[in-house]
Amino acid sequence: MKNTDFGKGKVAMPAGGAGSTPQDYLNFLVMILNKGTFKGIRILSETSVAQMQMNRIIPGVKVAYSPAEAGDFGYGFGEWVMETSSTNNLSKAVSSPGLFGSFPWIDNEKKYAAFMMTFYLKSDGRNARYKELKALVNEAVK
Image 1 (cartoon, helix red, strand yellow):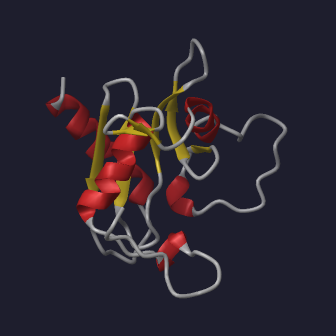
Image 2 (cartoon, rainbow, N blue to C red; image 1 turned 90 degrees about the vertical axis):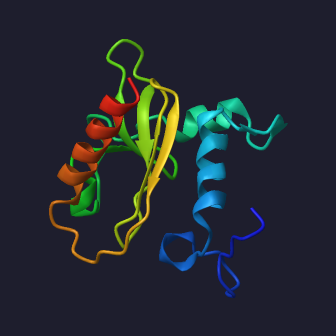
């Protein structure tokens, strides 16, 4: 990702502190969609991607904090789990919404990645809008 910057600090701050281009971010999403490979090059192991997308919010897990816009999403390692398969509990769709309203997601079932880039500070109602937008895109990619 040649156009991506995680800030000037000692520690990378991807949550609200990173800068990139839409194309670089979409390339990242495609790599996750392809189970860790991009243009034939293995970036992450398939096992790592599977672990990232496993919902860790299960009965008995105490959640100290979850942003309101997460709604009923589960959480894996660095990704919100939007939908899981009822048969094998694997993630059908994951997302990692931005602090300022951008909405990237990967639909593993329909095999696409998408990214809505926006800047909107009000977070109330975001979860419902994310679901509505994804449903509209799912209709379009039947």
